[in-house]
Image 1 (cartoon, rainbow, N blue to C red):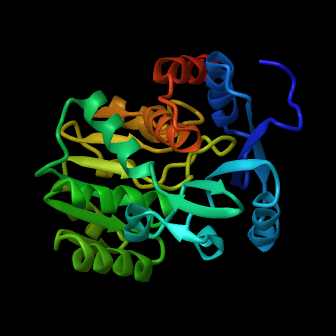
Image 2: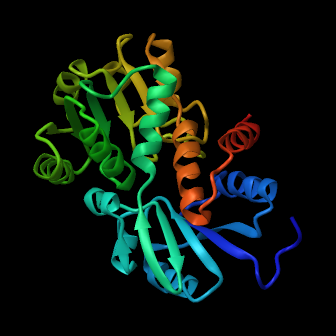
Length: 286
């Protein structure tokens, strides 16, 4: 692919921090492989500057954005339109921009479930889940699990009122399957013992804070599948701990790849090269 020109289309990643992200490498490799004149750029932006930066991007040669922590919910107020899935979820990780107008989508939930089902060889239907966290990633995962027929979704969060609010939203919008959980050990233990899958949807354990655990290791047993949406490091302390306890694990790279592939198609209208994306991500994380 030639050097960028005045005609080169841009895709940006909006978040803070972004030093850990491999998304630019993943997308740019496929742009190059397919001969698409497009460039993917990381743009670190604070919540205070999000509106200013985003509105400027809509006036540039930008065809879309990915959105990550901590802006997946906050970005919505600046969009012109929401896809029905993103509207239900209440969080956005992908934005398409055309003729200065923006439309938000969410590919996180589908990306997570595809990764979970492929790597653990289970179906989410009828299973019980313990979800730690209430951010944009959690909203997408919980809502999509409810859509896909999860039997029970226990939601634990440092701020209990947020867990209550998300559970109520799931129960009223989709299915009566969600229960908020206090972060004290007894309540978390009771919830996790009833669950098939434990999921960390927070940034706890992400590089450079690799020695942190999102929840107590004593909650994990050999019957669990433990998933972490953190992908840098590939093997978080949570996943290492779960593996030592005999649990099956699902690292965050699969979700990253599949949500990115879905976003790529939204940006370009072209089928992504998922194998190329996967190879690039695993090369960088080796």
